[in-house]
Structure formats: structure tokens, C-alpha cells
Length: 488
Image 1: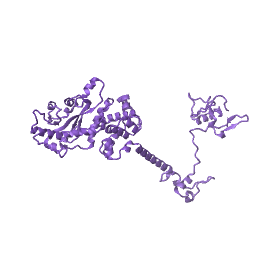
Image 2: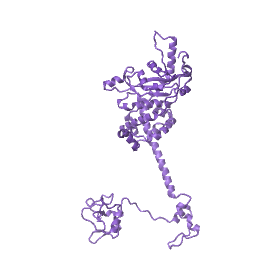
Image 3: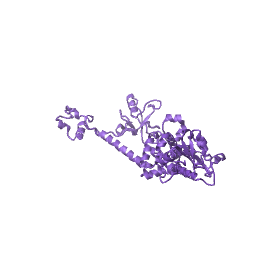
Image 4: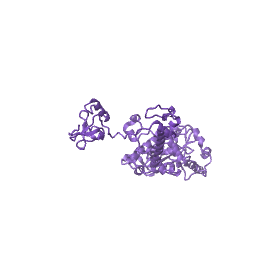
């Protein structure tokens, strides 16, 4: 019986009420237990603290037209035995299924009944005389139409995902040739970039954003696992980091290029700087004495075979701090600016074998050598080649190593032997200068480094120095002449 009072429908996903839809009728649950349970089951509800069928009502929109009747007095009632059947989650019912013989005939291309010579089931209930081998789809050697369709759908979905990924990747958009990869990533070719990516992809797939790691701590981070779905594909995050370091693009430019916020770019750069610092830090950069001598160029073998490493310092201009103490410690008299200073070591073959962390620009070459920890790597009999500013002969003697530097001028001019010695050391020491030039070709160092990235600049500096080794060997100029063995 229809309710004329204020009422609302109890069917899930239905928001109809007597106040908003006065043209609808609302009907209470039947008193008969069987019909009552049928209604409750139909609307997908269960009686309990959240639902009581005694006071609940169902609106007329959930009944078919055949389930309702109108009395002589104009009241709308539900027919005896009718239940709600019209719901948002109910789809149209499929048409009656064809018989197995008809479906088999369509699939096989011939009439199954006539080929078997028997009756294939009649309305009069005649005995079926068809072989069991043609009874069902799953008894056939060929897959059913549904299986074939599902396999085709999965194949097309995988193809769409691949095409969508290729279209969305910024890497594929900007890097087409080896020259593009050299410019945008500082890797010499696409093949080397791909090999490097294949090596780091397994561990990068479980990468956790820096912001999440800082917020939760290392222990909680290990328990919760990697960060949720990222806004960029993983390889595009690495490409974004390369653009920031190799090309020197600012965060605003990268945000516009990749269609993300500036804060996302900042988090991505910091995350990848720390991740690559951990990954590249596990590489054994320092070479043994046997490896150094095996890879030595002929000029070193002839004139100074004991050289284990060539040392030099370089400085990166940084933003001037407002605090006077920090300004004094970072000010470099050589650059006449506030700087960060780092020590780099190169083997005679041109490979970066040692990278120190960055120090304030006011530190001396001698002090940075002592603090960097390179003395603990040297062995008795090793030779270290450096510039005049490295007055570290006494420190090297404590580990049994010797220092090779250009001679100091004590007279009005150099003697012939001192001149030849200076030229020889300069021509061999040019290797470390060329390696530093490659590091400075990462254009992030072109401009003044803001103090806001001071927390990650040490990681970026180390990553750039190590990635120089992926650019190929650094060789001496074959046209250069060196002095005789007696000079060195």
C-alpha cells in the first residue's frame, strides 16, 4: 500500500524521497516473512543496526509496470508476490542461449545432426543421437570463441599501453639521436644510456620519494615499501634529473615541460640525486696498483710508472650567505667569490678514481687532501702527481708515497732541467684538467649554486664526477712531447 506520509527509498544508490519526487509512490515491506526476505535480498540489504525493514520503504521506480496495479479509488498497490527488480546494478538480461548443436554447427561449418545421422533433440523429448565429442566447446581441440576474444583483447590492451607509454615519454620526444643523448644526458650514445638504465631500473622501481623518507624515517619507510603511483614514468623521472644537471634547466622550465608542479620537480631531483649517490657510491672507483699500471699510457710507463693518481681541486661558485661566519669560510681568494671546493683524483688512464665531498671554498689544497681520506688509499712506493699548491710531501711520506709537482723558482729564472721538468709534469697532468672540464660540462655548475640546494649539491657533484667515466676514456694528446726519464 502506498504511503502518503513523508518517506524516502531505502534501496542503495537511490536518493528518491516523497518530498523531492511527489509523483512516485513508496511501499512498505510485506508482513509475510518469505516475501519480506525476498524484498530484502532483492535490494541487497541485510537487517541489522544499520537497516530495519519495519520502517523502510521502496519507491515505485524499482518495480516493473507489470508488478503494479491501480485500485478503483486511485491508489497504487504492488501485486501479490511481486518483488523489486529494477536497480542501477542490474543490466539487461541476455537473450535466450542457442542450443549446443546450433553453436557447434556455426563453429564447425556443417550441420552436426545431419552428419551424425541422428536426431539432435526435439521438442517432443526424443533421445539425442549426437556424439559426445561434439557436445561442448571445451571438448574441442581449438579454443572457444570466448577464449580467442579474450586473448585478442589482452593483446590489444598491451599494445595500447605500449603506444601510450611511448607517446607520453618525454625521453622519446627529445632524444632521437646519439647527439641528443649527449646533449641532454651527457651519456655518449643511446646504447650506453639504455644499458645504464637497465642496470638501475630494478632498484629504481622501489624508489621512495625523499619527502616520504624524511617524513616517515628509515625504519617506517622499509616497512611501508615504495611510494605510491608516480605522476611521471620512472625513466622520465631519471630524464628530468639529467635535464636538471646536464643541461642546467631550472625547476620552473622542467615543471612546464613535464606538466607537473615545481614541488614535484624539486622532490624528484632530490630523490634521484640521493638514489644515484647511493648506487654510484657502491662502484669500486679506486684501482689497484696492478690495474693502474696495466692501463697506463705509454708515456707514463716510460717516464713516471709509479704514478698512482693525479690530484687537483676545483671550485663551484655558490650563493653568498648572509651570515658573516659562513661568508668568511666559503670565500675563495682565488675566485674572489664564495665557493664550494672539491678534490678529484684521476688515474694515468684518465679514469676518475677518487672524489671527495665538497668543502667550503676557504679551505687550502693541503687541508682538503688531509680531510678527504685519500691518504688511507695510497701504498708504499706510490707516486702522486699534483700542482704546486699541494704541499703534501710530508703527509705522503707517512704512508711511503712520494709527490711529483712542478719545481719552485728559487732564482731569477728556471734552469734547463727545471723548465723541462715543469713542461713534462704539465703535459702529463693535463689529464686531470680535461676530466674537470668534463665535470664542468654538466651545466648545473654554470650558474651560482643557490644555498637552498646545499643539502643535495654534494650528491649531485659526486654523481657528475662518477658519470664522467661513462663518457669513454680520456687520452693524452699524441702530439705532445715529454721530457726524458731523468727529468722526472
